Length: 368
Image (cartoon, rainbow, N blue to C red; front, side, top):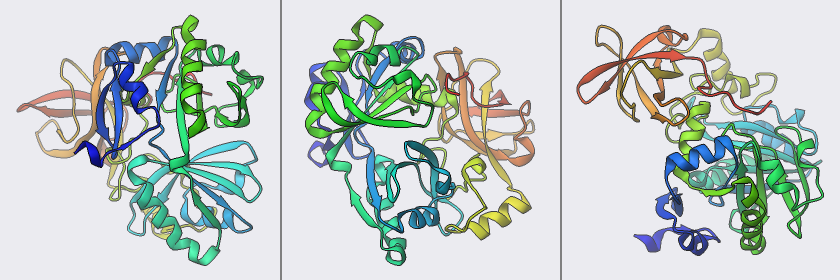
């Protein structure tokens, strides 16, 4: 089985650091180095580094690059200035979502799309299908790039000694391309998936090991540690960030999934007319966050019921929140139960445990 898994450049480094490796999205990835709890608190309170090099990157260039991106994504990429990034999604033709992604404007007629690891081939084929009309130059650079996320309130201080770029001056969802740890052309992006602040570093593979080691060394005085995918999941869940394949997928609409804010009807895009109708008519279910009222940990696919035991939806993601010491979850419920304060029940081992729908995020983030 292992032979079928792809490996990131730092595969051996993670094993030397004592990481427990697991299959994730077709890659052999570090799930934890010490404990999920310790790693979670490290990111919330200090700073940690994740290797997320399994993510996919496409370059889209040429006179009609923006036209293609505008057609296949739900957000309005025409609003992007050079050096800005945008969260968006790829709607499908049936009302669902092909993937969620980031769109980076590198320069006029030059963009980078960052997609989920499990969807690299699917997304590439999907965009290429529409590119027949636009003729943009597309390049899949996923196998040439490594990606590290340095996240936490001390991220800027921990990294500042490695670059002349003033890290604290990079606004949220903006990026700079510059020299980092002696390597030119590193993309330093003020984005992340933790709500703890920090940066994502897009690095040519040949520089990956050197930069990783230099970040670990520079970060030592700030308590920086390597962090695995286990803590990444609890951190993103505390923020209410969607995970593709769990909370959103080919059968969930952006409007059901709470992504109306990245669905802009000021332009035409794939399935935009049907989604506009859905917005007008209203959706019958919505993705919500909920807090357990007492003990109990919600898990994906647990049934959600109302006070009379009638099914109203299901959990899509759930965990014990390290920051709150309570069970938290995301799930789809009937629209009438989607308002904060609504009472729902989670079926856990044959019992209906009470929970309260709550406004997201569960834990305040540091980003503006």
